[in-house]
Image (cartoon, rainbow over all chains, first blue to last red; front, side, top):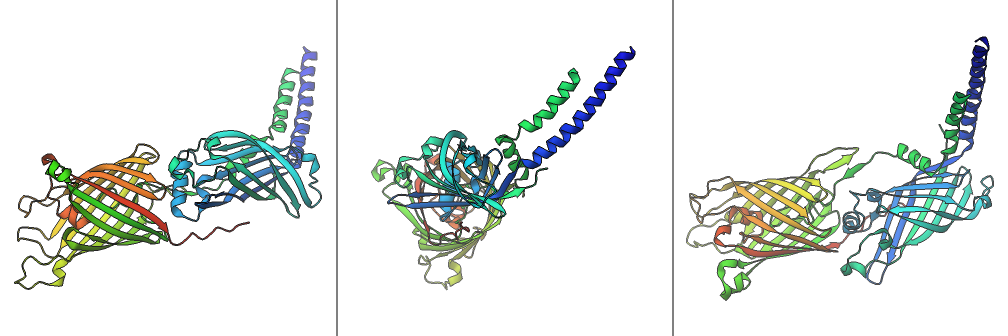
Length: 198
Length: 300
């Protein structure tokens, strides 16, 4: 009996120590896992056809970049895309993106060649980003080239790629098909600043 | 030791979940709440005959061409009314995002009309919750047809009629919108002593989306004044039809017992009855032009 109690006490002591150790280790790692964030990143798209040019801008893109893992996520409110023509904006939300039903689009991905970026040294690095792009509730795997710019006080991420509306089940009726480019040119410009992890 | 290993695992968990989903949660947690304004309660600035809550945004010009043909019961000889046509032309413009104005001309009594539509409230969710959109429409109509009695003194003011309407609309769901339109009309001159100068009416309109670009619309005005003694007797206007939207155009095709295309005419002077077959086929064509492009948001 006595032995048993002793064993239990010993266990408790070990547990307590481990508890503390892991607790501090956790904090340490959480601080080291450096995250960079922005709430006013830019995503725009451009469509050029002989009949009409369409351009939309969104300066309220939220994004996080974890430089220890290369994980990168973006999220955007569809209604924050603004067009030159008010009617285009209404059609974009009402007929194509169905923004009331599907208010957001997002990207979850990863920098695949993280080792080629030196986050400690200012400069521009070419990267490849791979991940899931979800638009109009349809998720597609994409892979695109871009740059990571390490600047003082932050990290900029830039990319240009094309998307095909039909890949995301965005149906474009025949009457206006000639007015919308088959490939929409998407531009992403994010200016991340570091976040303190809680 | 079993408890210990559980504790150990428990503490290992937070180390492993710094993945993309976690980053996404971080974004969602910090996402600012925004005001989400309801858009496209109706597809056009008219439900059928009457105004809808929609207005032209700033810098947009709406060119409207409307036709009402003769009655279906006029028979095959008149090609069921299509031989006869009444037309209204309108130019309407959004001055700001809360004020639109328009001018028009109807063949019916050779009437010129002008209106202003003010957006007072906009339905929204999110940071600001607003259950309905509210607009006020005021309009004036000037009939320039020759006075029937040339022998008496006719005043210019006798040609005028005024309309005031409050539009209260709610987009109840993605596919269904409803609007109530209390209306007041004052006519400076009426045909007989028994005809009221003031007309009070309550309008109701609805839109049911059938596909992304086609909707079924209905509109009815209940006229509160006793109508029996009016000369000619008037009836409550009822219109049923479709909105078809193609890019910059909206086509509205419908059947109505009213020949008029401005409030004063279709609320105050609808002489047709659905049950007798006094039904007019009608259409509105709306083409929107962007005169002033939106200021571009700051670009990188």
